[in-house]
Length: 223
Image (cartoon, rainbow, N blue to C red):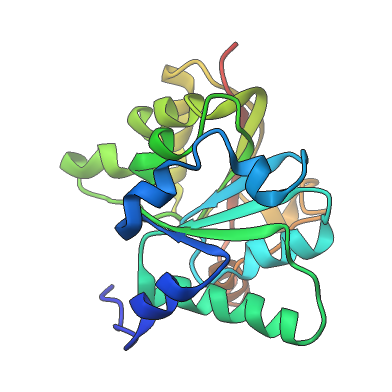
């Protein structure tokens, strides 16, 4: 799907005080190991990779003020919508100081975060990259799982949700081959015992309204 360009989005992102941008690489990469200093607390840091328009991570930040959240998105035209959500909430007097954004490709995670800096990773409705030659681009590929281990603390986990059964099966195989432990798995989240506390993304709400089942897993990295 081709994304519609939002005029001025890059300029607005560069001027946003709670957003970091890979275009200004030196400023972004010097934050490695210092994210708690940026949040001005020692709370755990959770990230969402490919956050889209930010509905999911904004809701998480509202519900969990004692956790710091960073939403990562590589497309400016999408990230700007997440920025607008936070700005709207703050204009209504809501404190979202525990929510930051980064515009970058997730392959740069180990350049931006230090070992043990991240306590949880959310992957929601990631691009399936269906062609075999593009498998390494999938966010649950062994290549990306290796990147995650370079930034996660020892007890950190990944939660992955998708409507794509082929991608979900691939992800289960990839996790197993990489010696991750899959603690929870369901091919129909909204008819499972794991639904309590679930926060829906924009895509999830759309798919559920169409009667499509949502696959979900929770995985722990190798010791």
